Length: 478
Image (cartoon, rainbow, N blue to C red; front, side, top):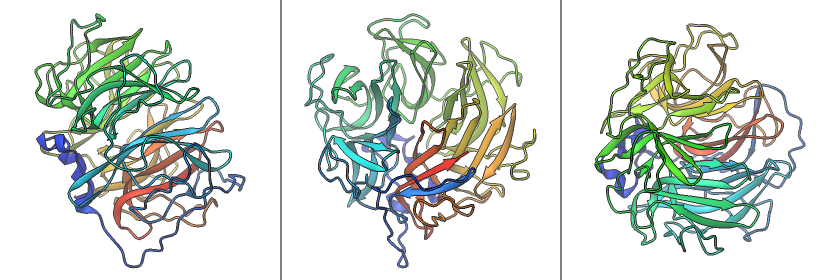
């Protein structure tokens, strides 16, 4: 299916020149071209369990409107993109960095622009980085912040936020200090207070096949560093340590493939905690519901992840396969250094079992998918949206279904159980029961201070069903 072109491209050697969905982008002559006025206040009434189109265009491949750097404006909006990274600051503002957009001719267009969105005001601010494409990184001196430092343009990186409110960025595919397009393993810190980036670790010149330095499992060391990778997942534990799992990249021997390694970053050092230092390892499921030191999810990229109220890490799906797209729907928990296979199938390419809307059931399960997004609500329940995967009929395309996981059971909450559906936008900033974002993957997400879920952009279908890069902004009130 066209919806997985980029994911297929990222697991072969072609990853070193980037990837693009451009070959599968659709255009439509009946496009409305409607775009937002993002300066309006978010004071319009919201209705629980409904989507609201909050801003951006209802057609694919819309250009960004940058305005004046550092100045919020009603017309500002990031351009359509997939694979950006996000943070939220202490005030509940949403931050977005990078991503990839439609290529001009044969060159992939990577971003390194940094944006802030205030949900209370409803306006975007272009904070830093370039308003052009394919900018090389300016690394400066390792460990020293500077207003001139900036990570190179990239997509499919991972991010964290530390206890002091600073943002962290690792890896992805993009441009190093020389402008070379590679898979990266650089680690950066950004202070929203000072507005400065610091290059912390990893390589500034991303040689092909940047291998990992694993050291001894369970032992931190200054020389340890995960290999270059993209489409990994990350989380932060209760002690403020950063964790990293898997992705598509390079192992200890410089071999490319799907990774299953678990890393912890604490006190300025990396520790290889679990998993293999060799790519393309199969999953070892063990007994469902029983933790074991021998269990492992296996090499994969594009999984969805979250942490529960107890600080345990959860992992859902993603894709395995080398040069073949093999989406998964297995559900895992990582706790006390051991993996537990919780649910879903050990067999890939599973269709979704939706059951009845708003009714949880032990037989329900989302279909296999990669590059979906996930949130947790105040009760610690998981919410899952979209991704590139299988619907109820076994069709593979971009999904727009919304699920909740609670008490060991899945419930289909909203959106169609059929993949590849266009978006129903309705009226800007007006919630309605019929509203639903179009099927998409590799979009970004965050939760505001009121517990509402937000998504931005990604690769998927617009109001006309055309495939491409989106810059629409949506809010869901659970």
